[in-house]
Image (tube, rainbow, N blue to C red; front, side, top):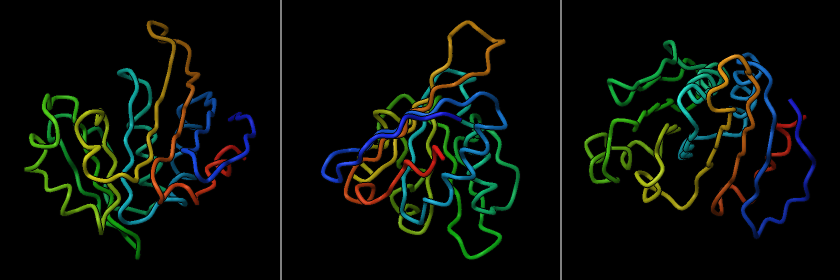
Length: 173
C-alpha cells in the first residue's frame, strides 16, 4: 500500500489517499482501520460495484474480532456481528437497494444501535448522514470496465470532532 504523507490540521477534515494492489491488501487495510474504530463510529463506504467495499468490511470484522463471516448483506440489508471479545458489535448495512433517505432506513434502528455499535454502511450517501456529524467516509475507486486490474485507490475522510483527533496517516505505514 502506498500513500503520500500529508500534514493534518485538526480544524479541517483530514483525507488520506491509499493505493491498494490486491484484495488481501484491502482486507489488511480493514484490519488496520479496525484499530482506530470504536463504538459509536459510523463508516460510510462508497465505490463502484466490485470495488472492494465488502472486502474492506471483512477486514474490519477480522480486526474487530467479531463472530460470523462478513459477507455482503445486499438482500438482508443489515447484519449484526457480535464481538467475540470486549469490543463493539459490527453492524454491516448495504443500502444499495434502498432508495430513500434515513426515513426508509428507520426500521433498521441505526440511531438506536449507533452508541454501542460500529456501523458500516455501503452505499449510504444521502441516506445516513443525519445519524451523526462524526463519520468516516471511505471512497474506493477502481478502473471501471477493467476486471483484470486489482489496483484500487482508497480515500478516507474523517468528518466531525471525533475524527479531528484521529491520525489516519498510520494506515499508510
